[in-house]
Image (cartoon, helix red, strand yellow):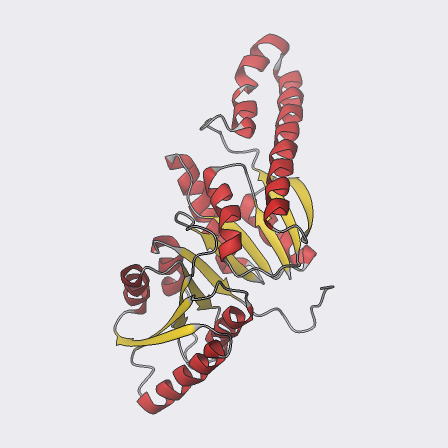
Length: 305
C-alpha cells in the first residue's frame, strides 16, 4: 500500500498522523510525507509554527536588507523549517509503523494541485490529510484544499477530522451504500484493513426515487454484510428514505462513528448521482468525523508492494 500524507506542521496535520493507527493500516507500507508551500498566501503565525514565523519575518528583513535579499533569506529559512517539520513527522510515523518505508517531499505551489499531481506521479493508493485549521484563514484554506483533493484525486482520499480515540480501542465505521460497485469497493476496502478486535460497521443505505426494488436492496446489503463478517467485523444495517446528504451525516453522528466510508461512483451507473457532487461535498465538509472516499485505481496502474 502506498500512502501519501499531506503535512504542514499544523494541529490538523498532526491529527491526520495520529489517526493512522486507527485507520486499519497494514504493518508494511510505503509513505510519502509532502509539505506544500503556497507562496501567494499571506501567513499568520499560530502556535509558533516555524513555517509561518519564517514567512512573517519577511517584512522586518526587507526593511533592513532590501526586498530581493529578504525574499531569498526568508525562502531559505522557510525551506529549512519545512524540512525540520517533515523530519519530525517522519520520526513520529516510524514510531507508529516501524516497518514502513518512508520518504519526504518539499514542494512549492498550489496545495491541492501539487498533492493531486504528486499522488498521481507516485501512484498512491491513498491520500491522507487533515480537514480543519486553527485560524479562520487556515480553516478556509484547508477546507477548500481537502474538498478539491477529494474531488480530483485519482486514488482514495482520507480526510481526518475530530480527536483521535485511544489507540487499541475498537473503531466504529459507517459505510454509505448506494447500490453500486463503487460503494461495494468501499466495503471491500474496509474488509481488507486490520481493525482492532471488537470494531463495528454500520451499513447505511438511503432509498430515493432511483431505488424502488426493496428485494434488490436487501440482497445488496446482505452481500456487503457477508464480506465484512468474514473479516471478523460486527455489522448492523440501517435503511432509510430521504435526503442522503442529511441522513448519512446524522446517522454517523447519532451512532458515534469514527469514520464514514464513501465509494467514488463510476460514470454510467444507474445510481451515479447519489454520492456525487452535493452529497459527497456535504459529507466531507459537514461530517463530525473522518471521511474516506474510496476510489478504485485506474486499470493498468501498478506498483511494488
